[in-house]
Length: 231
Image (tube, rainbow, N blue to C red; front, side, top):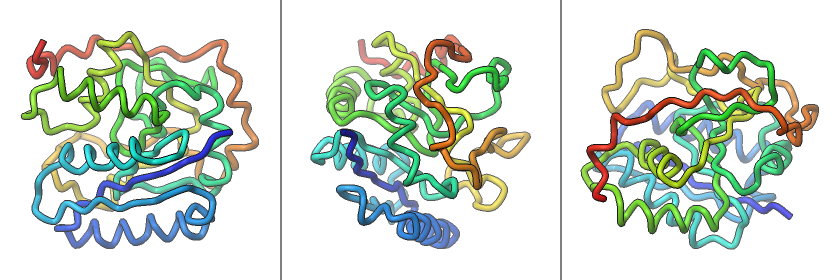
């Protein structure tokens, strides 16, 4: 039986993020997450410590939980209408793997399969089994330089160097509000970083997430962060 805990990374120093996190927690509340899940925590970064400082505490919350799986969420995401109702079925597709609930457009993510595979993850929302969260936290402390500020890059390095791929459900259960909520990290992209296949008002339970025999593989080399490796 899958049980879920969750943590939200919150840039509480920013007025726009304070509004967006309120909207996110309302979505979770209205969908019944506070009754159904074992714990939901908000980790606030009031002093601009950065994404890894915040995400690390989120994952530590997950490692200490009694749930089977932990979900990390950024404070600038939009959940699909039936997220809480359908997330367990999605996790059942790859219960032992890292799952990214959001993906940027990629050439091989063409809608031909229910699942995609990538070398790494995207930050907006990530699911891991609690046992793997614990493994990740030990591994990253031993292998990654503390100066790497990107939390999703740490997970990507962990996946790559431990012969894992990150699984991505299609449609994506989460979208990134990149056209509504301003970046607090100064990121600049030519196009909004949004899902090209967001679940929206559709119900995840109407999809067969056990259809895992074939996947859309989009595996990049991911060498740009190797300079942060300690070993």
